[in-house]
Image (cartoon, rainbow, N blue to C red; front, side, top):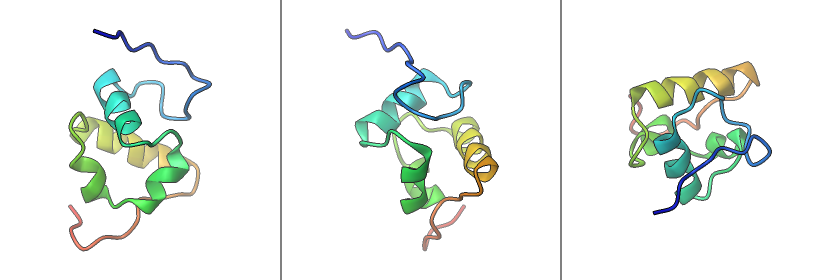
Length: 76
């Protein structure tokens, strides 16, 4: 089993983002907040490891940079 250790040079996700959420994003090939702008909030929420707290943290981090999730047909 590989132990995941966060390297802040790898991504710009919020520091408090939990390891399961980081692994879910990495498994989906997402390494930067800007990449989330191509996905809807619903799409991100469907990743195994992304729960409501992680989703809120990501939304807040995007907003701090003037960004947001893409608009999708299935918005929560």
